[in-house]
Length: 419
Image (cartoon, rainbow, N blue to C red):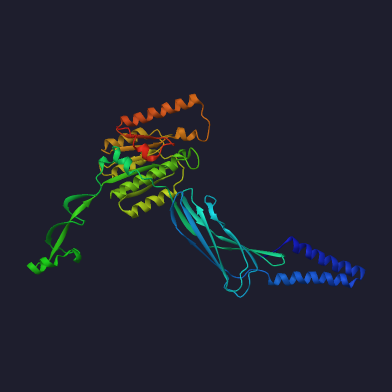
């Protein structure tokens, strides 16, 4: 749809006025001038409008980590036989992303078959699921009389994962990894890679497992049995309740917890352990324990989309999960521990079922001081209450880590208080 500019409006008003005045005073020159102005406007409206364009976008990366850069390449081609004249091309970028190099706006005048390229780099300072696009197009004719706006609805999805910190050295120097040995080999038959024994073929056995050399030697079908590989299950419970938004946009229990969850899961998956993740806030989302890079991708994708909300208590989560957990498997609870009176009984229930519990708690009191002024006396009282809460958890057998915002995750893990 063509939109008239101020110049076109003034031109049509002026032309009609000249025609009317010329008729009133019988001045043909004024009438001819007015008709000429109106005729130019009518002809410009007939030839205005941009032709069909082909817009393609290419991203250097579709899955990135928080703080990484993405290079966007936008190609615009005019496959028609008409010239676009003056065309403004604007590629919409989410406001959470910051343009680091280049610009996402270009002005072009493309002839038939011609194309142009727009390239810029954005930084992703916040985790989440985003879409770059659509591309806005604005046409203006050479006389500046009409504009026409359109949209090329091409969108490119981007997943920004939380940062993954290297915590291996910290875990090796603390007591946290001493529970885990990575993938271990059990001397029992099952799915695995190491040879265990030969046995007779049974209906349902895979033909790939048949030992043809043994068949040639004995005349009986024999199959290879492997040694079953077993891995340690590591369970992570991540608090995403509404209270986890305390602090700044970049520093709050939710963001710190997402980094901790991603780092801890990455560490144990690299050791070939099976890791499960449960987030709880508005509802409980659970990823069953699995090992491998695919599980790490699932965990990072889930963490990229979590937001603060709800008030589900920890005990509701442990009541649902304990029957499904292998007895004795380690459990990481990542929570600020604020506003949840069920924390102590939940930790006690985990410990009574033989689980080794590690509580990694972002210090919400120090995070709140980043955005609001807390009187000195009130701060000391809140700090003492938090210390008492952590000591109570420690008394129930949990290994407690008080994570203050100005300390790196690896340093915090070295300060674990053994239960």
